[in-house]
Amino acid sequence: MAFHDHQVKTLMRPICARFVLTILAAVLVPGTLAAAPGGPPANDRPTVSLLSSSRRDPYRGLFSPSDAQPVMGRPEIAARPVQVGQQAAVPAVAPIEYSHAYQTRLKIHKVASFAILPLFATELILGQSLYEDGGSGKKDAHVAVGVGIGTLFGINTVTGVWNLLESRKDPNGRKRRVIHSVLMLAADAGFAATAALAPDSEHGEVSDSRGAHRAAAITSIGLGTAGYLMMLFTK
Figure 1 (cartoon, rainbow, N blue to C red):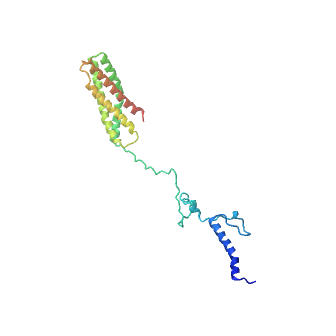
Figure 2 (spheres, rainbow, N blue to C red):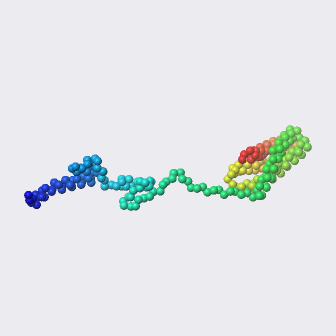
Figure 3 (cartoon, helix red, strand yellow):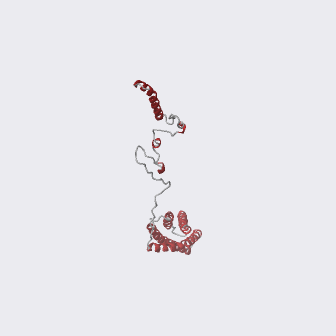
């Protein structure tokens, strides 16, 4: 049977229209592609989408190398693994070297310190006895012990301050050394004030001078004892 042109066009129009609608449905509505006759159901067919997986998640692959996908035609981005808690290597602290003179001064400082507490106790006993009942012998002994304490404190002040300056870059025990130095220097100042406040006679011509002399001596001895014991029992 022969068909004319207009008959062929009439038959092709519904077929073309159905084909165009099928393509539009597949493009505009992903997953709803009409099933062809005899084909698998539409729900069993893979979902078609214009957006690639990388367009759905543009940041995917920046934090995990395995999930990295090409974006807009660019090469795949290789992400570097991020290590949480990674810290820079701490440089080793250079050891502090002390001179031979430092060790010598330290020995002198320690030996002089060993005699401090006995002299403190002797001076307190003599001073209290002289304060209550004077006498020329007690006064001479009190002055002699005081001179001994002043001499030892002078030696320890020179050696201690010198070693403190040399050890200023050593962080180990710095706070302890500074506190000890402050206490001993305060005791130095107190003993200087004690000598200046000493009365002219064993009974004292002015009662205020005797009291001030005694208070300055006890305070200075207390500061010196605290500084000595701190270095003796702390490491």
